Amino acid sequence: MSKKFGRYVRSGPPAVKKFDMSKAPMVQDALVQPMVFGFSTIRRLLQSGTVNKTRMEGVKAPYILVCNHNAFYDFYIMSTAVYPDKGIYPAAVDDYIGREFILRKLGGIPKRKYTADIGLLRSCRKALKDGLIFGIYAEARYSLCGVTEVIPDSIGQLVKRQKVPVVTLTCRGHHIFDPFWGDHSPIRKLQVRPVQADMTLAYTAEELETATVDEINAKLRTLLYNDDFRWQYKNHVRVPYAKRAEGLHKVLYQCPHCMTEYAMRSKGDEIFCEHCGKRWTLTEYGELVATDGNTEFQFATDWYQWEREQVRKEVQAGTYRFECDVIVNDLPNARGFIRLGEGKFVHDMQGMHLQGIRDYNGLPFSMELKAPAQYAVHVEYQYRFGLKRDCIDMNTLEDTWYVFPKGDQFSVTKISLATEEIYNEIWRKRKEEKKEKEK
Image (cartoon, rainbow, N blue to C red):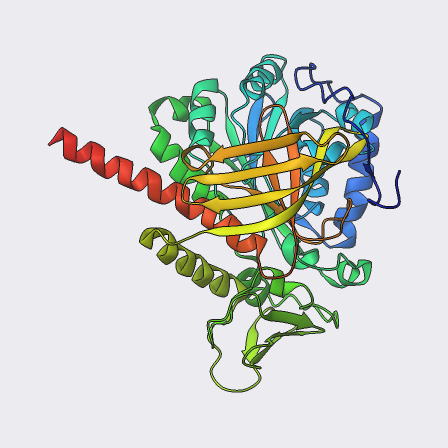
């Protein structure tokens, strides 16, 4: 690997074989599964993890398992909760870097985030026909702030058609254990306990027959809802880790005191605004407390929701737009990324637009993701593969490109929120127009 570009990032033309997205999923190995269960059980016991089961008596595969997603630790809890049943589980293509063989042996199938992949439906039907669990992390990414992210309407459509039981697994405390924005310190992880999960039979096959898709989606969203900071405070889960707030400014990018964007920073147990100087302490029990003056938000999740509302105002006014120079890496297969080149990224009310020049041959490259078809986007903080900077993950059915904005006057969190709000606004207007025509 070239040191110039970092671990798992190489230079040169991408004349390489791409991910085989159509390869049939592998049933979990009979020898590997008990090993995974044993290791996962040890990890669960270390955090005093519990799984509370509701209506699960006698529930066996095949069924669809719908989970929320806060941290990698979710997989350990899930592995212990479903044992001894076997399953097939879609996983993002970047999870396969350097370990494709292992993940496929564990029942993983590669998926490009937020793409309409008909192959996923085929894999689901085959898994259920073979008497397996088909597992879905409905948010398709880790939660940015410990609160349940967007769950698409397509989940309800999928489970309605399969006519098998639907089970939810809602993990609580995993964002506190290893926040997406944090430093992933093993010291922090050792200090956080207990964690818990709720496993619930949401629908029997018979109950699905009489439920509408809207009803299914509403119930699944209710069962999967989680706010980790509130859960931590309510359950008095202590996090004594001295650097527990470091990285939180990646999510809380706008100051609610002076309204300045991109001036937030964090250090130790504090988050602060470099523009106006206001500071907040993240307590050992998950509260935010201003060191001087009014505390605008008790929890980070409230601050995050307020930021969404600010973005929504821009979107509804039609003024939202972001443009910057970027570096682009391509992920063709599990060997890792290829440095594609530099270019210009634009995010506006029509969607995402990327154009650039390839490093290795000087030819142009481009990708466009139209807003009406993009209900969410995956982002990363300090992405470990390559530049160790925040980035945006752009996907088609054929390509996965990681886009790294230059400079520091941006927030991938805002880009994520804007993607969702633009999609919501487009479809809200279309529904209103349809109602007007029907009058």
